[in-house]
Length: 309
Length: 272
Image (cartoon, rainbow over all chains, first blue to last red; front, side, top):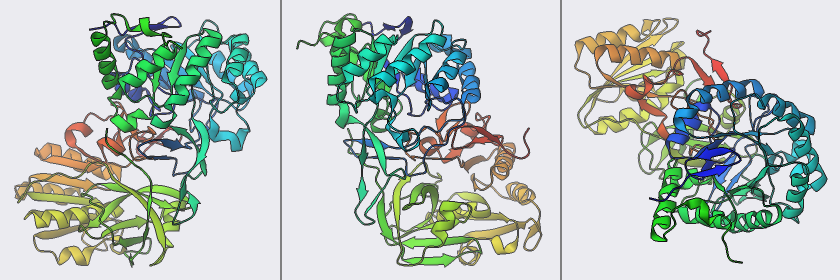
């Protein structure tokens, strides 16, 4: 039995699997149920300052290779989030799974307004989601696609977030992800979560000659995007040396190990909830443990960033 | 790992039946392989996609009964024979019973739709069925002629205005039948407060009650997290819609509130 525990920005995770933002994650009860399914930590669904409506259905479609979604970040706003976070906190110590609050806004001031409240709440890490490709119609190009914007939002959040570590969720839909990551690091980012969904992509139904998603286009996740995610995690790890939550198509223990060798400390799991069920977190941890035992790895965190390039 | 796909297939509507002034049944020639209690996501291209329970499935054709109550269902109810619509599924859990059991089905309003499918399947398995139907008024009662023509099915009716059957709630009828007969299981679908009352009556009589719960859904396959129920955080689309009384008794949310598309609690009118 290898030691699967990892430390990330001051929080201890009993294993490196973390529920990625946007997959289930609407209520504290769900966070608990995901932890009971083996997750080492939880990322909330992205929290807005005020109520935000998502897109109409259909919002999620899948094939065996990819998932495409345009849920559109529905959320009831900060007041409801505070209620859920305080509810989760009652059982957090017993569960032993840190809580990462994902926050989102249309303007830097909105991010800052949420962060200011979050600094006094029982959360472990603040994740700023500046990379959702599904609200472009509403807000234009995501902040994560322009280095100066990414830096500005990071700074605005860091200024008011007290001692909460701040990580930035990066977009793969850029020419140079290291340029964006470096800009966020200059803005004070403590770490990164990457990648957000790819694209957006388009899926057309032949009979109707129409896109199936109500938003027409949607962010691509799932097994197909994993090689890109692994490469980008490695690039950002090399460029910034800041700790990373590696996310994107992780479905098996091998995928998670690969992500860690590329440089991730934690591994985000999202679409795989569909591919392997809600207990995918336990399955991945067990598979990682088996690999460690076979390969004489006593402490899983030894493998972080050990890819020989 | 299984090969999985969740994309709508587009089917032609073969037949449309007007059940009431606001409810229609759409028939499709397609092998859906659904079980009573399961639902499909019905896609009206360019408008929306909504969960609809299956109201008939004989292996070669199936039916969906749609009540006009919003943009999507209103749009669907305007469709005619020959029009096309998208389907994903079937999804979710089913009603469970055994050969030859005595069942009570309690349908409220359009909640009778999945119970109609259940009645046909259970009758094939030699079950004896007391079908209790509650509606506002007699013109809102669904599938009455068809169900009356089935052997092994006894119909009991309650209407709010007394225009057919008992005036008021179906509860007393249920209590009476549970006292008079040996009933193995109760299965219900309808307004949540009606189902809650049915569950309580079933519990008091020591009869297992299976309830088809309704929650706002987006994906239907356990990813979006919109249909979770407190305090267990279970997903209605995967662990439901049909849940048995043992689970329901642990769900403090049941009969109190649901969550809207933004995840905000919306309390039933008799709460708070």
